[in-house]
Image (tube, rainbow over all chains, first blue to last red; front, side, top):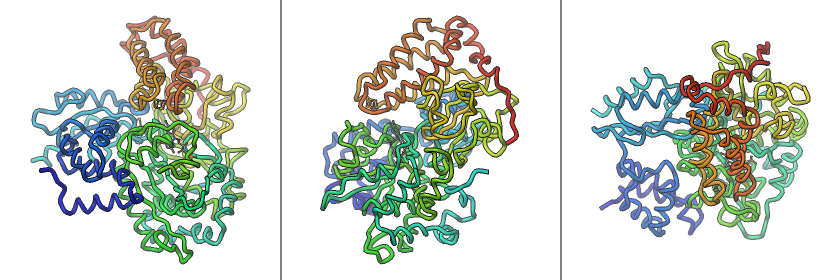
Length: 163
Length: 451
Ligand SMILES: Cc1cc2nc3c(=O)[nH]c(=O)nc-3n(C[C@H](O)[C@H](O)[C@H](O)COP(=O)(O)O)c2cc1C
Ligand code: SF4
Ligand code: FES
């Protein structure tokens, strides 16, 4: 059975309380973030159904939202998700080379996950860090001014943490 | 030196915290505003000439005065912190370094507009900034600036942060409101405008982060003082986020009297182009506004020095000018390929189209494909005309301005760099090999100035 812990349920309640009475659907985006974080980094159908039940809305209302926004993963992803920006300003500063280097180093294509389940590579569109390009998002934080050496170090860091 | 109103204290040690912010003069505008009538606050903002900093440049005081005030219906203030326009990262900087100025501006604005529940809609990727803002809100609350009966005035106000989940379109104000209601970010048909029917069908004002922060100096110093800074209809200071091929990318607060040349080449701002290269082109106001070749960027078609303000950047219309937009300043050096850069922008807009209108949904994907073909040396001359045709059919034929935003960059690239597109068609081998475009657009320009 899927279910938030007591503490997380409290958080959900607090999120709902931010919106006027009867407007609990407004909490959908924040609650989906919470669910994705709690249930393995992606939104499986039973997870979305659970969120629908919590917010007293129809499951379809959750599916249509989850499929609209790029930050919700509808498929499993690796433990570490690299989302490398490839839009104009990052491209001017060599994001193509960074993407190629990560592909080569991890031996995966864009959208793929390494066999050990550790890394997923995705491309992203402008993340609001254009002055610190090239960059990527990894979890909650940005990694900026990327170079090959920095990419090496980040991968090492993740491997060390995973062990 | 430009005068700083928003970022002056941004690097004071500990300014993210209430105590330091307060010691440096923070929250004075709230105390002052609470001694004024809400209508007088709106009047000060009108006098200041402040124009919305989210991109459209609409006068803020006027927008506020349109807010409907039916009896017994709540009104909402929503801060637009979705910041997703390529080249733009100024709101992030402000929220990251000096979050209390946004909270302060929002309290004053909420009071002026009669909003007891105000929201900050922030792009989902700025997850760590959510924590910074939540902490600032908590501190403001503990010190009596938020919550019930603020400073004994009887005015109640809460500010909540609402995290988006990755969708540029949610920066468009009606899509933002849909998203805030827990739906897909599909823009609404206007009218009705948010000022009449916004969040939960109630009267709503949506303003950009920088706009709401600017209310603080306006109330502190008075609207007239604020209006003295700058020139013409470009009053006050503007945050510019500069990126691309420059020595010092970053966020700069400028008063809008400096020249574009000074902004790019002086050490106080961008610090010139790296590796001794020449300036080729620039998109001065975020990815949606027209790209300009170096010569038209630095001087208007009339031969005047172009200045960093609303009027001067748009001088000449789209034929020879551009726009201030959101202040996302993207610089291309002589080695950059305009076709490739335009392709990445077309891909961006295709990715971000919500899909409601066919000209936008189909047109953005079509333009992306053609541009990629040309970039890869597989294009035909007729493709260039086809591109022109597609962008014209998108512009003005969609529910929201994302369609125009997707059309303009393509139009401007063809308008000013058509021979670079043709060069790609005629030299397929070469463009594959070097990946560069033509450098000769940079020719007239070699202007290191001392700032
Ligand atoms: C596609 C699109 C994206 C937008 N993105 C943003 C944004 O990220 N931030 C923002 O403040 N305004 C954005 N805007 C403009 C808003 O719709 C709105 O005009 C603005 O938030 C009003 O605030 P202001 O008057 O303070 O500028 C966008 C508009 C469009 C059409
Ligand atoms: S113009 Fe594009 S983004 Fe805007 S409503 Fe139409 S399809 Fe959606
Ligand atoms: S273009 Fe990469 S962060 Fe903006």
